[in-house]
Image 1 (tube, rainbow, N blue to C red):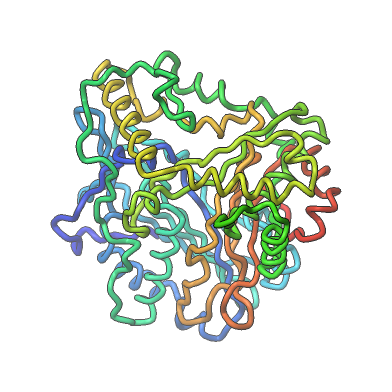
Image 2: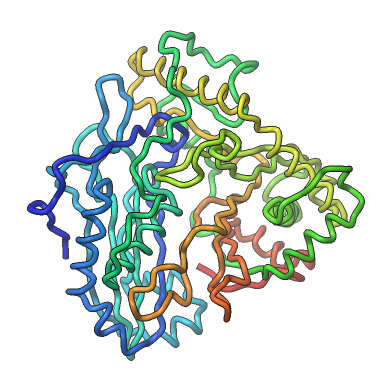
Length: 476
């Protein structure tokens, strides 16, 4: 079922420039399931007719989800509202013979949902010159046998990151309940430009002394060649994605151990996310080396950093300028569990090193380089940039902590989701989501999406430092 709103659309809406921050480097769709327990209210509050009507209301307030990517003459890209867009959001409904209890017994495994056709085909998300973009939002609602429901949704990460997508789903749920709420600030189509004046004539040669180490660009190769160059040649069948859980109580204990270790100097501190990044990086790097997937040696460790915080910009809004805050870790740092406090401190120091001046200079370089590529006739310049730490041929491990996104806030009138499930196909890059709400409606665990080559995953499962605090929730 496709939402048709052509007779109800606004005449205009604010557009967003995509090439004014690093967001244009995230060209993919991020899918997610939200699972709802059996409830008599599902038949009335989550009926196809009611959900369709409320989604229409929600979309009318957030017209950028009815937008499309526009490549301008100078090859800058905007996500522009266009009432003539042929790729409007889609909404589908189905029923399945799968029961809620069967789903629960399998840890709400993503692959189980796939086998019952509860998901949708995931487009590649790449920005195109032609008008063949996929819809910005795609939703599929599945009614489970004997009660319960699953809502599958995905948006293009270029314009709507995880925070924006789940904020919209929560807003849709509020519209479904008839609440006259205003559009959340997360979804306000305001500009989050980091730079306003970019030198369009600067030399675009990649001077290693001036360019940021975290961002790479290559105009001498085709995008497909770049993809091959930075991707480790591994059969997809050997990649094992799993979801692990760590309680917030255990994470607090680890942080207290770091604070009591004597590693931190006067005035220094670490966040829970720094400690979690250090733990994950140690265990994942150690597993890769013990399994001989990667050679023994130092690693690059990174924590994804939202640049809006050090730049003093509003922390909420569509998209997000991100940089990977890197630090170097010796083999000793990752092989020895007692070096966890030292690694956590190093992660904290690396995050603090990303000063506003450094970030502005990094973005200035990137935007100037982008403009130079376009001026020199490089086709699709947005496909020639990548984060160096995501080169899977290197010994790199990192974490993206998204434990504050409103993943469990979408209550359509039949209760909040009891579980959410996504997947992360990128090896050695761990994504952290909040776990399901506890008895007080506050999450008491974090879910870590870990994908490794099979020998490394086996080694991780045998690591006592990992298994002492992390529990397997489900395999893919």
